[in-house]
Image (cartoon, rainbow, N blue to C red):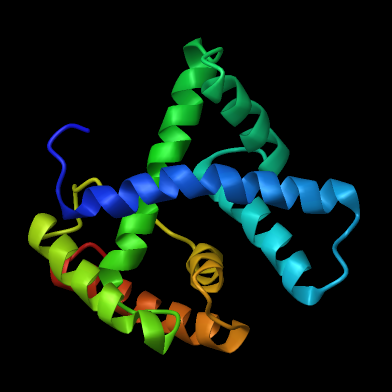
Amino acid sequence: LVNPDESSAAHELHHAIVGQFMNLAEQLRTGGKVNTAEGKTFIRDMHHMAQWMGFDGVADFNALHQEYVNDRLTGPSLSRYVDAQEKGARGFERFLRVGKAPTPALQAIFSQFKEWLRDIYRTLKGSPLDVPISRAQWAAWDRLLGGTAEIALGGTQAKQEVINEERAQRGDE
């Protein structure tokens, strides 16, 4: 890590878990063992996340991830993989920076991350966290951290309101 700070833990956590989640989603999808609404939602969330990050889907992420882990990824494929991973990790930091937890049990942690990340990134514009995040991606992270559909949708709305407020303050609506 270069110049680690409080944001480094969340950033690196995303790198560490996204591969596990994508692999699980592919196993569930190809194994035909998904017979619950939650399982189908998880697979859909991971597909959306992969596409939002810049991959064609979960299978594309997994193929490139495996090549990366085995130190066989080079050239444009390596750049594409690294750029997509960084977008995912920075987006996750931004998700935490808003400070709206998907469950009441996580609110204290989210509040602390909000404080740390706002101290580190005083403004979003031009910062590494200046990453556009779709409503579907907000909802996916909410659900991954234990939120229900209703909480995820409500949290997503609250997060969108915060984003809109930040844009208005910066004057870049």
